[in-house]
Amino acid sequence: MAVTVPRGVLAQYYRFSLYNSPFAAHDEGCAIDLYPEGDRAPAPVAGEVLDTKTVRAPPKAYAAEHDYLMLVDTGDHVARLLHVKPAVEAGERVAVGDDLGALVRAGFFAPWVPNHIHLGFRAPDANPYRAAGSLPVEAGVEVEPLAWDGTGTVVDTGETWARLDSPTHPAPGERFVGLAAGDGGGESVAGAGVLDGGLPHYDWGGLLGGESGTARLAGRRVGVADGRTVAWDDVTVLANGDPVTGVALFCSRDEAGVKLVGEGVDLAVGESVTVSVSRD
Image 1 (cartoon, rainbow, N blue to C red):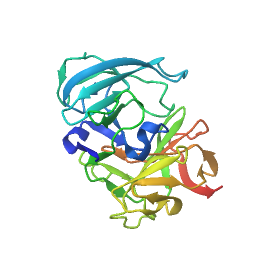
Image 2 (cartoon, helix red, strand yellow):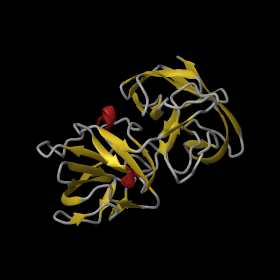
Image 3 (spheres, rainbow, N blue to C red):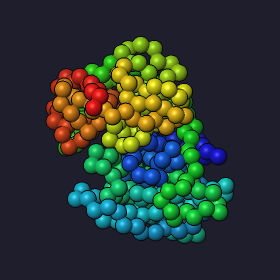
């Protein structure tokens, strides 16, 4: 049985994703990453803290040596939280929105991934320390699909990413939106669902709010959805004809522009970009 993260909880965060990760904990959408403003972690659950544990993270030059696991008894489930240095201890009770501690940039992150809280849920009788085996997670909001024709202008960049100004968010701050899984090209995509995950750099993606079938990016087929899990096709994403690692796909409350990621992203603010997909 899936566990739903309510609308009021999700409203604390400017972005969320169920599939934008290469790790087994996210398989079949069995975890959700929540992106808060600032460097502190507002609690996405209420209950009693059962344990906090330091865990070793993969070594990365840009990341902290250690990460942290926090377990919270919510009554019906045990919540597993990662990427937060605990400001709470076992035996304490927390409410939704309470400060859990400082966000940690761990070696589990790709270099283009912002700081976030990883959240998963276990049945009370399941081992909460294992990385895999959490229950499926549902986002308790409708996410509006946005059509996109594959073009845009760079409005922000980092060492391993560039964000385009298109598609635009129709109502920043009011609701969550995501890139439509339908044909795009400016056409109506009502009911198409939205794409979630890393295309194609993670093995699987997600289709949130849509139906099984062909998944498309800017009018080009990129995979096939079975339920809400998408198997990406063997494709390469190109920006102005140059290959990039891929497109980061997520649900956003405030901004909606496409995010291109990878060590090979070499785009400047103000540059016009056409994104295309080639079949390998």
